[in-house]
Length: 47
Image (cartoon, rainbow, N blue to C red; front, side):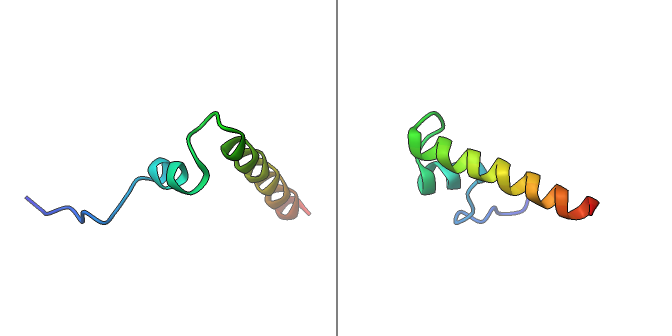
């Protein structure tokens, strides 16, 4: 059995640490900004 790297964290755990838990104002602001970013990338691809 392979050993897991104990320094690795999940994406959700990273976001919780960096931007607070889901549902908080800080996290919601991040989530909204990320949605805008994804939308802009999609627009660039279709141009």
